[in-house]
Length: 479
Image 1: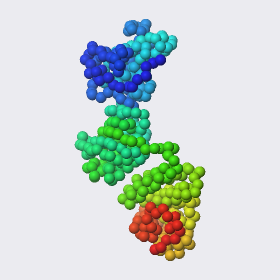
Image 2: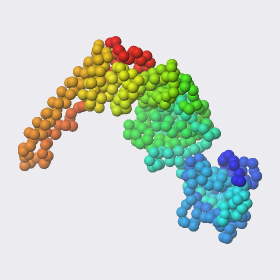
Image 3: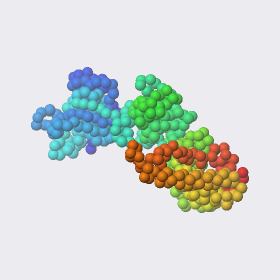
Image 4: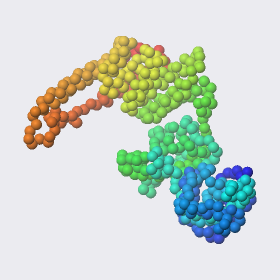
């Protein structure tokens, strides 16, 4: 059986002089001997996730003779490549490669235990046989973690960290982040935050970073390159003095974190407590105008209770109320983000828990209006008035729907008139556009759907606070 061990770079093997040898094994049992033939360049070594390109010739036994060659990258004329520390090559060989720089050439001597084991690799490698690799590292590429695999986001692990578990949403994290743009340091600070909240105004982690932190281990440190299109893009960032279309480099150290229990590890009560906690955080970010973050926490609010269908009594009543309020709040956040279809879906879901909920009808009306479905929107606002006849906001929205529908009809008639008046009137010197007299002003029209939104203060005055969990207050609203 091959030896199982922790893959840790041998520091002595990193500083050899040409002709020197060292035992790379942690227990110094002579199982992995590296002898330097040519020094490499740079100060970085392969690490987890890096892609390593190299040439090699492999010999069975203790002598490097032609008849002992059992494998070589020269046989097909192509470089051999593998992803570092992903279990793709012999462990003893990888242990030695961890201490090799690009351009370096070394001999790697492996005992049977650190090579192919007692069984060997028939028919090429006999049982219980040692092997030798004559290896030259050609290049080492950072892990490409960009969505399109186009090397626009590159991650270089500097310290792999400890353990097998990763940080998860909601867990407390202690970190240090340094950011550079064109060699200028624009960020260099310790940041303690809860996973999922790092991009808030309070913590200031660039929003494109945090999605790539949830697979880090305790103590892990890495360098990440972001091409401009994945960073601040053409707008840049005035807060950090970053101009348009700038590539950025970050050094990130996740010093430590403490995982929180996952959904399946919690009791019914604990799930609802977590849901309540996330709803409160969502309200906080909504009131701060951080709608992306608010929507994220409202989504988590729903995720922690929507799948448990076996609750009864007071537990079920609490669960349903969390789903009602969570959907209403998420709809409001989506409206602020102009995600009108998603907002409408949330309102539909809320109405399954309370078919007379005026907030659900009102917010669905806003979503429909913003989607230019004026007739449908008007019906939603009329439904609000059926439940709460004194609601002034609903009356105002009905008037707005009626006015907009009339304006739309008039615009369509005017367009038809202009198009018809242009038929047969093409002159010899025009540009050949038959309907130019009717269509040349279309680009100047202004359908500003934002006019359907009402200020947050006005809605709170009409409908109460966003975090209200008293479903009875949703049936009738005092203005």
